[in-house]
Image 1: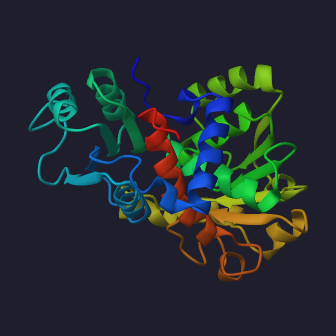
Image 2: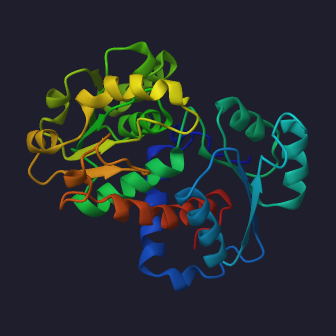
Length: 311
């Protein structure tokens, strides 16, 4: 049976741990894996722009001995000029993996439904699983563990990063506070909260949505934020969003409320003076560029895993 990665909970905890450990092995000895995907081809479908996602996947595939094809939907809009069924079926005949970075979750779901090769969600409006595997690798490297961790997220909670952080935190049985405005426009969808609750039943995770940022920061080992103005947000909405999220900005006050050895994370891009202040992201507790580097290694591990190519 073909395995896809449409959201982080498509994998179980044990699979996530294997991928993270493989990523760390690759990072420690990249030369060992130089031909692990020799003659394999990855198709990368991009509707939304990217820096880290494209460069890490394309570089990663090259370093594994394979080849990556960048395909922009500016050239052929998915589901318009050609339907998703036909795109998936044709691409499956040419390539070994299909990845996509798109606006809508339904596009990923359809690709996975009709593809005859593994599909990787590089981002949609419902999940960002590659980023979250990278994040947990970074936490493991910096904190030495993935157990007994408190992770606190600040800002826009109705977004892909928040959703998959919640899912993976639930899988690993950790504590997570999601600090966001008390507004349905910026809060997690019910379908996600229901899934988190179900996962947490067996893991004992404590995932909470709160509206007091200082409360969320308390006892935190990891302080995390993401962009307030994501790709696709109309410019007419920007002022309203900044006003709503400013009380949840990660600044020195928030970091002081967290544990002394807390790390700061942002999946980037970051706007200093918005979701975090410059002294935080450029300060000694920030691990954002180590986090960004790990995208390269985790992409490799994900592709190896989905192609049953672990050594």
